[in-house]
Length: 457
Ligand SMILES: [Zn+2]
Image 1 (cartoon, rainbow, N blue to C red):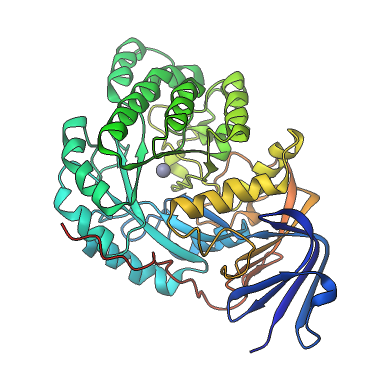
Image 2 (cartoon, rainbow, N blue to C red):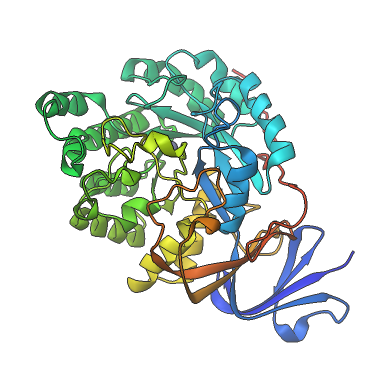
């Protein structure tokens, strides 16, 4: 079997950034060696000053297929992922129809992804108010874990789960050993805020911000941590937006609770003060909060209280953003960012003194651990899948529509300048993106968890 060797002055390894040669054979990284130790027979890919990073893994992607493929599908989402340096996406169980709340629905998704996905993929199953009987079967069918909402998810076809229903579901979740990813906002504070905002100007961002108060996130996280203490399931807080929950999360982690936390590029890039009236491209839930809040999220990410950064790529057709009327109440909430997350994160991380190793930890290693594939993906190390990203960290560019690659070119980042260009992306040793082009047919494979027979009740 022919060996490929990627040689760079800047290889991001678990031991740090260093000059190295990465030997790839039969889809796997066989060794990371010094240039002098490269076998003479190998095919050399000389990268010079371009950095070599582990392919990124997005643990929070909404593909929307089947059912809402006109919003986004596996073909377009996975190409956007490859262009953004991602080599694996983990699909969320909602916004598609049917939602992934049964093993049968999971099988339907799998069929589509197998033929359409350019990058590797896995699936989260849904935990909704009435599918307790499907929780174990979803694990046996290969779900990487579960997602649930404590508040209305903003879309039909997926229901929220209240505390009482969660108490019925949690023993099943706990038994599988898989993580439960939770949209942590409680309806109480949101409903309370709504009554005072009825006659306010909904083109104004401060109105939207007041409609989803910090308290809604904080009280949800308090509840979840109490349940985690009681049931000892693996809890993952998705898209944390409020810094006010950080002391709670810090304490929970020092107590040894099995909790992990994610935030998203848009919470680390934008701040409420910058969002103009009617600029619904920045609507998401929970909302983008203040500048001071954003800086506290950065600090928590650097300290490890926030473990990882995921995109929450949640696209929609352009008309659903209602840019004409600019109404924050009726516009779709979601920011699509698979192809832009890395340059957004790198530009912001770099000016705060963070390094490429931090990016690899937040966007590859930790998400892979969450998705249960941390022994195969997310690192440049012997035995790992040869998922590689060639990146020019010092090159700058202005974001234009042709760089987005997902179905609808809608993005709050358009027209802005960023540092860091994805040159090429390799999935298990095969180039899937190269300077704007996607060579070859889609060959993404499902990332299956190691076999485990503990799912019987
Ligand atoms: Zn989401």
